[in-house]
Image (cartoon, rainbow, N blue to C red; front, side, top):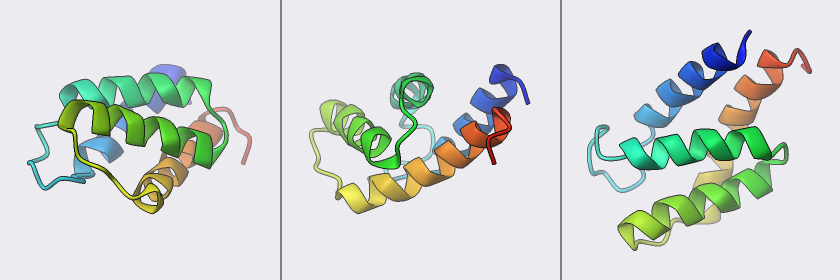
Length: 86
């Protein structure tokens, strides 16, 4: 799987994640930032912290880290599959 394909799959997963019940189209900028963070982080907690910061910065609403860890595992599974690590 190429990086472009990995990013498309990550975007699909993130579009389905609606942590604030704002509608799936409410997170366009955050999704772009999270996909960029996915390139930098390989540990689920590190990625989860970044996800929480990105969404909290935009919406000024706190997200429990557990919710961010759940989505980070999904995203890292896509990344590791793309890199043939699994």
